[in-house]
Length: 121
Image (cartoon, rainbow, N blue to C red; front, side, top):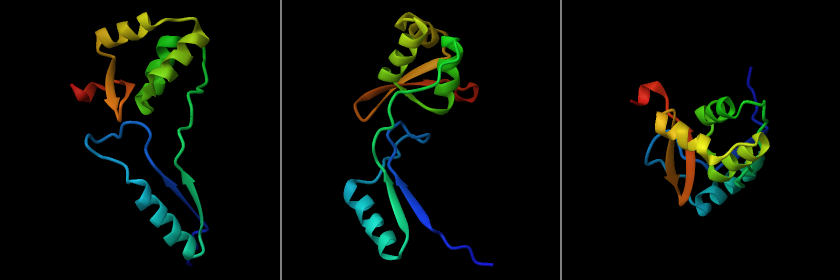
């Protein structure tokens, strides 16, 4: 049984990758891939825009920040949006950084917050 691929999605990372030093392709490479796949009859969708800072909020700021940042590095704007929803302040983020539960990193000129996993040391 042969399965035919009907649609391809091309995405460019907008957050820090899991492996340091990994960079997304430049625009020319993405457009060349798009044309190549489209010429082969595939529907191709480019996922190149930043998806925004809207995250669900369950009521516990500390738990939400740690849960989301464990799988999704949060921009400063996303952290601030969560703090605004929960009536919190950057003092909570500072405390998470000081305790080692959260780490701050820069990627392509933006600041991100990511949960520090135990195996990171």
